[in-house]
Length: 628
Image (cartoon, rainbow, N blue to C red):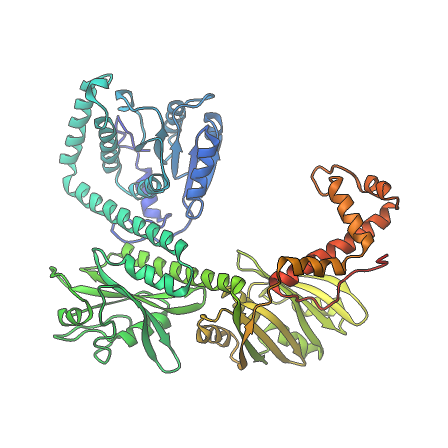
């Protein structure tokens, strides 16, 4: 750990970490190391609300550990921790004591003190890397962690310089007369100057690297925040383009690519971009790069296609003549501009490309950042279209004829000469899709024997088995158009296959890119064809109509049982009343209570999902036994 006071030039653990490339941060050569592990951040604060808030701010990008006191912190910190955010004033063990113990253990982690304690000259010799004075915000916390991860790759003496400089800055923010030992600040300033003179050129390079990292990470946060407020694909495209209106960027536009006719059209442009398709017929890139001769530049259509086909960021130099035609009022610069073309993608689906004009050379970390922006835009488009499908009044339904036996559903129907019908579909965040299939006339053992060995099947289990039909649950990672459609955020209305011939009905918002959806399905399952496309009305009921429908389904006894159970606290935990107590109150036996309760619960749940997601069940109201 870098010392905020006394130097420890023999400790080179961070240098070794830099060589290992364990973090996705700019490396010491200015490039980006491939991520091997998610950085681990330990947040230590006896203010549980603040600690939990920090965890919320950090959890999307880091593996966060929490400790609500000093003793907990020493139990939680180990060699895996990369950054510690440490409160100073805690009741059981102070932050200063925790810091000293971390240093004594020789743990190679960066430490930021995060405290309401006003800094004084007693911190000069404390071995921390950064000092944050509360209150702190999300940008303070996230930015500090990101910067300390970059600093972790520096040489030990250079890390010491930045730690001392941080200490000097925070003390200089105080009134000199209020400091306990003003001479200590003078000594500290002299040490900072001495270290700078010793490593001047390297420190300057690291300052440039830190500034690039701050700019890149700040830009990504602004993009993320802007996308939160965007509600449609058009909003997202416009928001992103507006974000590229300041240096070192000269503008951006988002392209749609129509593979069928090999054509590119602008979807949105920044105000500074007036003619995005200028020079579209000129020389094009070869293998992901372009050569710009006098008065010529890259071909936008072919460059966008290259980025989409390769699923990679493509860069190309652009001539000043091209810049004059594309940009409204370009400023003169030293060196050459470049166009960076980034595929806009969500998993295997590419929605188009982001084209950005950059001043001068592009660094590896900027290239990586722009690639991340492309994925962020893709995620935003997918989320927006899913939300439109959920809340919109109309939708578009595509019907596919599906005969590709690489799909487990189609293959199952062909192997057993049976009808296979999807009953429900549930995607999860980890990319696994749970689907419930009913198979007519085939026993469970035969189905599981046929499906279980498939690599795409994470798990399979029997739900029920009748003489004429078996219901099974499949957890799929691939191997079906159901997975492809679910990943794109579309809704599967139905999927039935008989003797190797399937029909798949998919519902999407009206503004969706239907070509992209179709291309994604056909890429994985070429033997699929769109046989119908129609606009459909969303089935929306008023609350009063929903209540009336439910009342018509429930018998008087079922309603009485459910109301009594609710009033008696049966649904609370711990239960306010047992099943036997509720049954006694109703004057019925406990098994009869359970029978009516289960029947009523099932009708309530079926009515809810029929209203919110479309009724995909094959049965009727589902009540069993007596309804009286």
